[in-house]
Amino acid sequence: MDSTTNTSTNKNLQDDLKESAHRIWLAGLGALAAAGEEGSRMFDRLVDRGRDFESKGRVEFSNQVNQATSSVSSTWDSLTDRLDEAVTKALHRMGVPTRDEIHTLTQRVEELNAKVEMLKPRVTPAATPEPTIVAVGTPDPTDPSKIIA
Image (cartoon, rainbow, N blue to C red; front, side):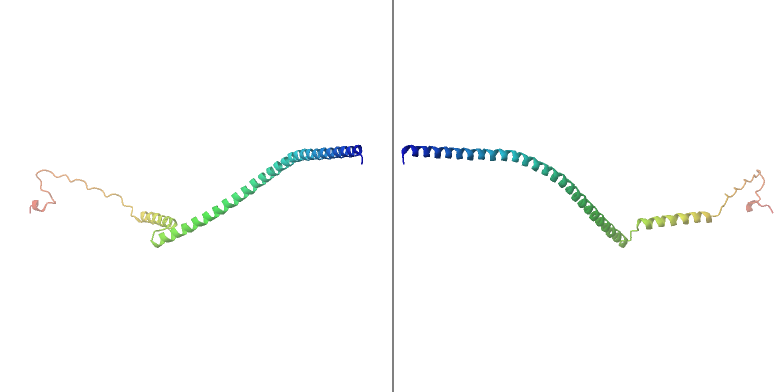
């Protein structure tokens, strides 16, 4: 082989190699640009998905809070009812009348007072006796020691 052919072949090989390296470099830049563009779009899509998830999460969270609140409320109502029953039973065992019993007794006392008032005799005040005028020197007819026989 001659040296010009070798040099020419080497030159072609180097040019091909440069061209390949350059194309690989351009492909890398293209991939970077695509990733940048796609990354930006991907970021925007992720933001949109995040907004959707956040709003759904708020609704779901609100629903769960409402369920928990109603559950706590019904549990509290049940506990207060049980406590009321227990206190009422304890007071009843001690002989303390209930509000309804006191109300009933108060009505009966008022009715009895009204009946007693109706049964009282309607007495007019007694007339006071008129004073007797006694003349001086005359014996008192009602005094036995002054009767002259």
